Length: 287
Image (cartoon, rainbow, N blue to C red; front, side, top):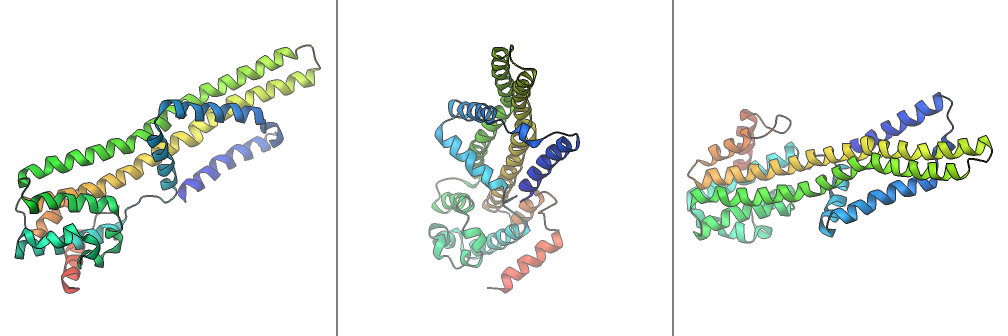
């Protein structure tokens, strides 16, 4: 929602300032210039990136409309679920976690936390981190490398659409110049015509430059930055899971493994130590 508000502010400032200075909005509506700018931008994206990256870009753009995907409620459910799992594993051994990890959709623990169990990426990291330990395929001190490799790959995949969008945004002023040059070519073809006609062609050509700069600095670059923040929020959530699982697998007490994960959070989602203790007591009481 905040993205839409920002777009309205940008357009409002442009339209308001232009009309206050005596400009007519109709003079900014030059369809041919819009076609050149949008066509060049879209074509550059198609040349630059494979289909999977382009689809990822669309998905991430839509994601910016929803804002940060993980808030305090998500972390509260995560910490409670982790605490219940870790306590069960400590009391009955890691093998007791097998039924919850292999079939999380029927788990009596995960069923209490729908925001977590519906997050397929988060569940894949959580269950994928615990399963090798339960099976004995990796040693606890090897788990961090395993999860870090997976998270680094996910982070790289998230940044690929952002890199493409940023490069296209940087190219938009150049495409604006292309549109302006084409307009000047048309103007020179009409140089012997009436002054009003020449002025109209020059104004239309300048609209191309205006559009390229506006789209770049007013929309695409800010959108790419927003996508970076959204990706950072996702990565922080996944690394919280990783840190807690690695800590527990290496012998930390459940409360300490979760405390380590808590301390890696930013202030906007980090619960205080007292809040964490309170929510974990609630998880135990709810059994």
